Amino acid sequence: MTQLISALSEISRDYRAVFCDLWGCLHNGKTVFPEAVAALQKFRAEGGAVVLLTNAPRPASSVLAQLDRLGAPKDCYDLVVSSGDAAQYALFSGAVGYRIHHIGAEKDMPFFTDLAPELQALAEGKPAIEFVGLDEAEGIVCTGLKDDLTETPEDYRAALLHGKTRGLPMLCANPDIVVDMGHTRVYCAGALAQAYEEMGGATLYFGKPHPPIYDLARRKLAEPHGQIDNAEILCIGDGPWTDVLGGQNEAIDTLFITGGIVAQQFGTDAANPDPALLETWLATEKLAPTYARGHLG
Image (cartoon, rainbow, N blue to C red):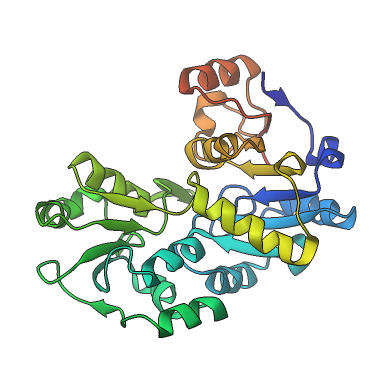
């Protein structure tokens, strides 16, 4: 049964590292949450390592720049690992070909250009990525909607049907379905990938809850901290079907932040989920996070 806790510090002594989600936990795309920052700072001050594990379709360098713009202190985390990082390996390995049709915003272009040194070496030995229309493409790379403030997946129905008819595989750089940007809910690449799959299209995922991002996070974590067993890691996030499910699939304990994208399921006070509503909802969804708390703190 999921245990409601009063603070991260209540359980932190049991873990050497946390894999912490960004959107809905540390910030909402506009504002950093001071209580979450303080909790992560305290965890690190006591010797723990913090990996910010995000389904952002952009590489870590771009995510770090966003954190700087939002004012997130550098001492509340050790490193960032993104879905974009994990998906880049597949892209430059030719998982969907090299003549690709890109669905996404201009802000996501660092996915194609900002490469870690090991990826740069991989890319130099492969054909150059070429952006083409659907009729000429070998595959689709979806980093999100072109304008997530005004568009919905329905706006892409015709393009997705065209791609499916041609048998094009889709690389989804962000498995999230939605995130909350301030008080506005916006669709992510995962919503388009889900629609594509429902049409019968083939989709490849690399972010949470899928294994590649966890494998990459453990490798990156081991570089400065040595090997850390799954039993010593805690996954933190507000995404039931990404953060919680991903942790469960990896046999890693999870802290479910209930005041995020599904807060309405647990009563009117997002900071204090109703225990009975929480237990019933988790049973219905067949999820079993180790711990739960309204907000990270």
